[in-house]
Amino acid sequence: MKHSVYCLIGNIFSQVGFRLAAKDVFLNIAGGIKVTDPGIDLGIISAILSSNLDIPIDKNICFAGEVGLSGEIRAVNRIDNRIQEAEKLGFKKIFIAKHNRKGVDLSKFNIQFRFVNRVEKLVRELFG
Image 1: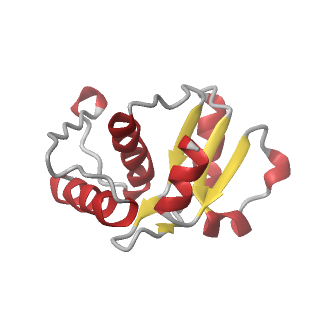
Image 2: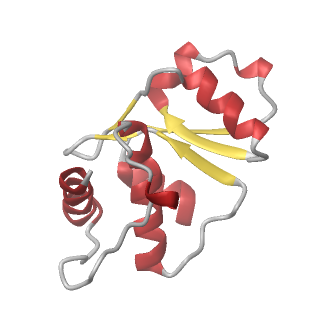
């Protein structure tokens, strides 16, 4: 997990232009859960960007996506299950990879979708 967080931070630095090199970044996973699912990447990047910009993320938003080293946001498996769980937990909006769109029947969910394919688009959609 530690190595992958370093890669994500490097990605933010190079793709979006944020200067994180002079900052300490601490990541706390609730309950010390060991996370190996790359689908958490999008949420981690969003949290780091939110902190750097000092703009909070609305509590009704969640994320599911893997982030590649060149800034692309990749589809994740079991996307229907992830969306269903997000709804069950009360989230109103979910950011997922654009490539996951073709595998999702949008009509069976009552949640707002934001499809993103690059970190830069995530920044525009999330923070304006």
